Length: 271
Ligand SMILES: NC(=O)c1ccc[n+]([C@@H]2O[C@H](COP(=O)([O-])OP(=O)(O)OC[C@H]3O[C@@H](n4cnc5c(N)ncnc54)[C@H](OP(=O)(O)O)[C@@H]3O)[C@@H](O)[C@H]2O)c1
Image 1 (cartoon, helix red, strand yellow):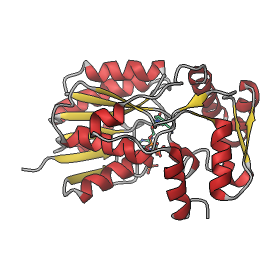
Image 2 (cartoon, rainbow, N blue to C red):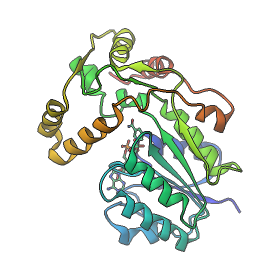
Image 3 (cartoon, rainbow, N blue to C red):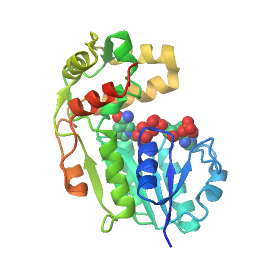
Image 4 (tube, rainbow, N blue to C red):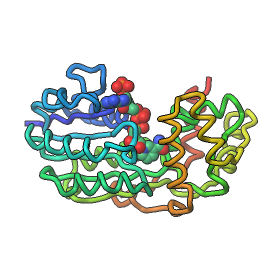
């Protein structure tokens, strides 16, 4: 019998692609999010057993972030509920360079259900469908990233690695640290976005306090504190390297940011 593969976060950037790719390959997919039936809400552990009933394999994108307080409790509980439901394989999306995320990875890798970690760098799609899309419209990309270089990754590559880990063999216990193929400063990314969108987009390096105040005004203090602490943690140079995680998992290199953004522009990402 074909395994049933559940996707937590199936309406999000990675989960939607994971579920679509699984679908296109003929797998049985259960898409989970807060409004699906069954529903899966990270804040409603009472729902989890029903959501995972009959599930054999599981992809999980945790919200808001594995670095957020309480994520370790949630991942511990998810591993336990998944084990009780008979899940045989879990693939967890993680964030590169985050201590809190690393603790969650370890919890899952030490739990009963065989697991694979996909530890990703910043998504290129943050600019096409994520938190940084607005910068294309306002023309200002304001971040406390100084001149740090980031190996932006294509979310389609992340989904392809996750699907391979869910459906292929020999991935249990592995950590795939996945990045794009080149390092770009945020100023270089702004220039690339300007060229591709034919709009003027400028990178504005800001301090952590100013960044916190700006995010708090739009999204509230809790989100502002989480994002500021995340930026403080990862924008210290620790992620200024590329990895061969995509090639290791898929046998082909990752796509670069220009290819991803050019394709997104052609598909109407900013219209
Ligand atoms: N962005 C980056 O550059 C980056 C890099 C590395 C790692 N990550 C990690 O990526 C993860 C986010 O994954 P993503 O970008 O694929 O998702 P996303 O685009 O942020 O979408 C969030 C998904 O989670 C669901 N969701 C929201 N609140 C929820 C809740 N309380 N309970 C259950 N589901 C909920 C949403 O569905 P509904 O709203 O429909 O419920 C949606 O499917 C985070 O853990 C983040 O740390 C991000």
